Length: 98
Image (cartoon, rainbow, N blue to C red; front, side, top):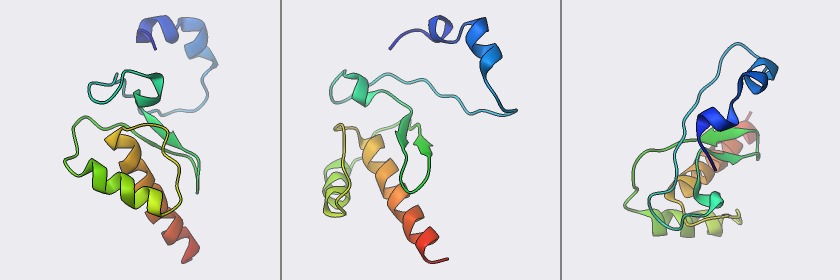
């Protein structure tokens, strides 16, 4: 964790590849203050997928139970991580249907 200006120095920025990016910086305001709760959240299955969410989901317990029922692992109590896993599972289903 840290300030953006301390992480993305000019040297770091010059090494980045590509011509587009999406950025969102958010520290946890609910749950714990561990690094696992910081955003953006990232999931690498079924493909690289990231999520940054600025809000609170009212059905977090239900989402987490649903995700765990799919045998997916959660690293935090974050509603954003649960939502990311719901998206990832739906994406996996869509890719498998092709």
